[in-house]
Amino acid sequence: MPSYVHGYSDRENERLFDQANTLAGLLHYDTRYPAGSQVLEAGCGVGAQTVILARQNPESHFTSIDISPASMGAARVAIEEQTLTNVTLRLADIFSLPFESNRFDHVIVCFVLEHLQQPLEALARLKEVLKPGGTITVIEGDHASAYFYPESQFAQQVIGCLVTIQARLGGNALIGRQLYPLLRRAGFQNIRVTPRQVYADASRPEWVEGFTRNTFTAMVSGVREQALQTGLIDERAWEQGIADLNATADEEGTFSYTFFKGVAVKSPCG
Amino acid sequence: MPSYVHGYSDRENERLFDQANTLAGLLHYDTRYPAGSQVLEAGCGVGAQTVILARQNPESHFTSIDISPASMGAARVAIEEQTLTNVTLRLADIFSLPFESNRFDHVIVCFVLEHLQQPLEALARLKEVLKPGGTITVIEGDHASAYFYPESQFAQQVIGCLVTIQARLGGNALIGRQLYPLLRRAGFQNIRVTPRQVYADASRPEWVEGFTRNTFTAMVSGVREQALQTGLIDERAWEQGIADLNATADEEGTFSYTFFKGVAVKSPCG
Image (cartoon, rainbow over all chains, first blue to last red; front, side, top):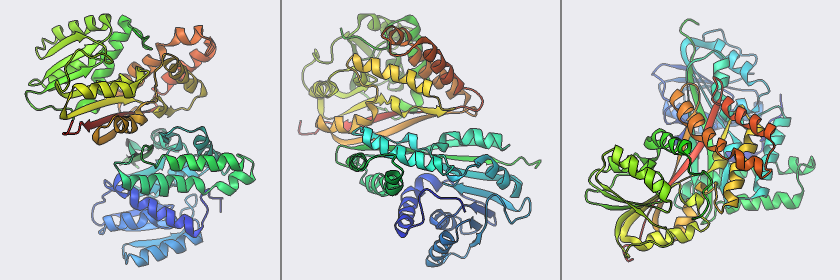
């Protein structure tokens, strides 16, 4: 199993559900499948997006796969807690899918391509199991879309640590801007990419708390040990960077971040 | 008259109207004033926003001021061409407004604060001539919100040249993210800042042409001589940077940029 930059701790799991709930409206409001749809969710992780998507599409069936047994266990708990009956969990690798061709009406991939060394190859594999005429939905962030007030070189530096560590693991934290060319190269049609921007200031306290603090700053904080141990940054600069990120959640602070959502179609001709 | 980073050439004037038309929907669609409103547009420049706002609010009267006689002349031509009868142009300085207190129902300022050494002081002066209960609308970009694919250090460098030159002239090309704290410090109430993101890829050719090429890359290109003459960059790197910006307008390119629009109210108690 490849290394995963955010790790598998309980605290990280909690962060993933906080994040998913905060972002549900922004990212998923327009993901509505026709009744009876068979949907593959590739890389469901701890099920943070799964529960939102399955609740929102009660008449569709979700097959949600992940490569991590630990995440799958957490996803199982989440699905049971929500008493969802339209989700089948399965341990599987995107690069070796245990499904026949043209098996699914739709495919969705959320915060997964950013962690893969071969995102284009992953799209090709997912296309194989997607029916002609079916849609693929891809959602990714782009950490270079993060800018804030007050500005801070230290805060930029700690974000840079996350980007570098993720890149060393073969991922790409700046992949959001690439959804259009990736979907195009993978041969999808009718590609429509839309940015979904988070903007937080004191007039939007739910975003300051739910995103600036509990999603973004928490995510960056998660790579502290890796960043310090590999000498990417010294402890003093790290602490200042995190303090400065937290300062963007203060009364006069602002924080911007953009996710990208791409929806595209597999040619009806296969 | 303070120096103005974009200069006053005919070509630049044309760019300003291209930009305004491309962005009109995104930036101004929700600027609608009640019939009979007296609106001050501070820093109208060549009238690129003026004609859009005045057409969209035919029953409001606009008093549009600027400090540059050359720009004012161009604005006069634009207004006559559009046969607009609800605009009064006046040569005036934001920091020395020739109006009595509480004179205007509403104030709008678009792409102006970014060029001022004292944006907070400007807001204070504008607040004086605004009636209690009236609104101020402020629109600004933020050049650090520009990111694109393919990525390019040279492209970042040429954008950095514009940011640096504008800063040397006392301006701030990264002011968009500061609208909330600025309006707050100026004592306005009910502040609502909304990001307005431009996203261009080949599926949106009007944005590729109207924004990536004719607005943003054209704007950066405008500081070429200043950048080279002041040694901020060498010619080879400059040409590569502009070529790389143009490459983001190609078939697989993407380009993102965010404007911020803030609307706030002067306390009914004055």
